[in-house]
Image (tube, rainbow, N blue to C red):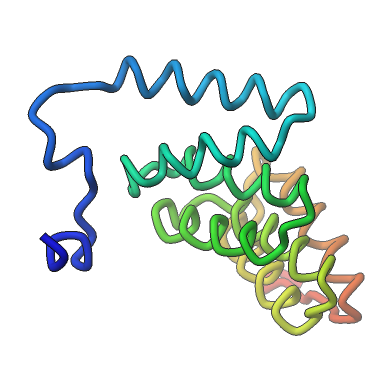
Length: 150
């Protein structure tokens, strides 16, 4: 059993019945809690959800957002890192991790995270907001960004 989890297995894979509807209710409740400023309570619920489904980008990303709101930088960075591993084409995870690294004073890692976000979002028009956040964050690290198109 331990080997199963070490190799990336999730609890949801072991259970016979589909409980996605119940998980969706819990996830929506966690988002409601986060929406009213109860980020700590939402984070606790999201941690349970990530235990059940360790492959959900949304669970990990929202856990990161809740931890970030609570200034729990290490937990937020970890959650954003897991989200980025699950969906490598999402620039918002490394960008948010960069903001956490910057908040806790780790400028070199913040710069790396912002550069990763810029690499992922590229020049896509739909990613303009993430691109701007990453450029702003990168500037705060004292680093400069030169795109391949310059």
